[in-house]
Image 1: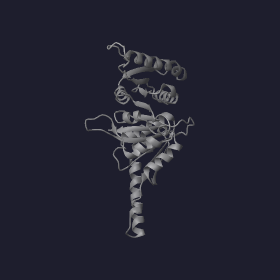
Image 2: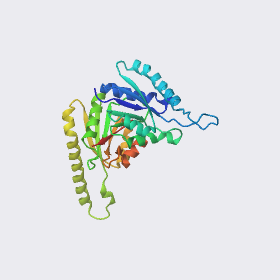
Image 3: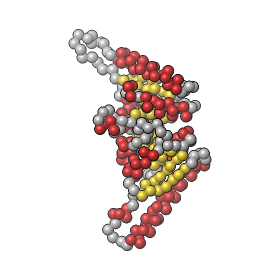
Image 4: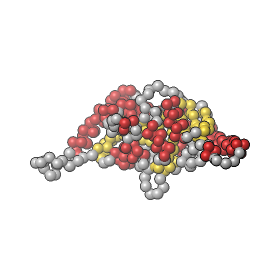
Length: 292
């Protein structure tokens, strides 16, 4: 059995889709599912309350009962799935990151609360990414209509898209019996040229595209051998990476992107500008995988 799938539940009232996604991931991996909730115990300010009184036990017991109430329904839908609950104290992001230290996957909700903020990535998800050591699945979108496709965004010039990231995408595609679509977005620098001949620019463009094609094929080759059952489509597209990635998330079940693991004595990963934009605007779940 692999490490557990840990799902961080912040909003009990709107957690059904989040839990469904996490349970499916655990079931596919043959791992346990941990339902986690981080709570705060605040000192009371009511006049006349004994100074040694703290509501922490009340808050903890309420959270425990809410998590426990979810278990029977999950087991009914996913027979054989081992489900545990974990109530931890403290700010959600660091608490979840510590709890998921040995997890194979950490699943978090991907929306803020209310209005325009509800369409964007919540602060808990961003803070969790900044602290997590394992892959983090940010659940966005609500469609249950499977497309049978996993998308992998590969920056052939960025070491953050290393073997851990590519391997995770292939594993997800295999677990889902889905195809894998991998692409590299190349931004044509010739549009910035104000000198030189058209022939020169065309030759440079052809050489650059060939280099990208070769680098992409090289990155995918060892994983295609390991997962021969996964149907792979790959291509190099010309355009702005963020625009291409966000638009493509409407056509797939999952997008996988990489992030640099921190090596400066701090926990978590560094989420770059492209990943940050995709996380805010994707129409499907986004898996962010730290490259070691």
